[in-house]
Length: 224
Image: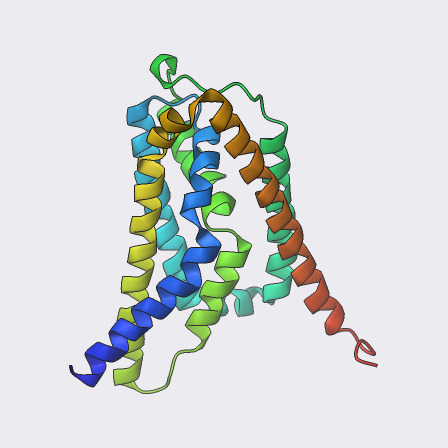
């Protein structure tokens, strides 16, 4: 096997393994169902495609230009974590307080197209699917580019394929989330949504705390 091909394969596996646990579309599927309870199956499938596409673009942008964007605005990753953690906490709290009645897709009429496009990005893509933790990891991956044209091309190809694989996994999990709904039933779906919402709230608190801890560590006298 050529060295470049092996390096690409290893890079793809690294990107996929680094991003999949924190994106975690398997756990996000019940929350996707809860936030699309007023959608018909066709609209939910369309939203799944839009979310996967948005996630792909957001991850790709974070990997390749995230560091430059933060530097341009004078921001640091801990600041992004603090702000993003608050947003994730708010989304988790809203889901916890949401009506526990399971949606009935057969009688759903769905939102209008403009609302659907808006919802596909916020909150379904950001912060539910690609949150501040994911963005910070993607930015870190992009910051580790090696110098040299050949190495840069190999790393870029690996990251592109890895992000594409993540987006494909998101699409599959969200596209067929309604089958999970039928398998779990009304009570099971309600329990799963509540549990996932609580975990999301805890993740938001953890992201917020990580950012605060990093910022406190940069203060004068913080290390003694």
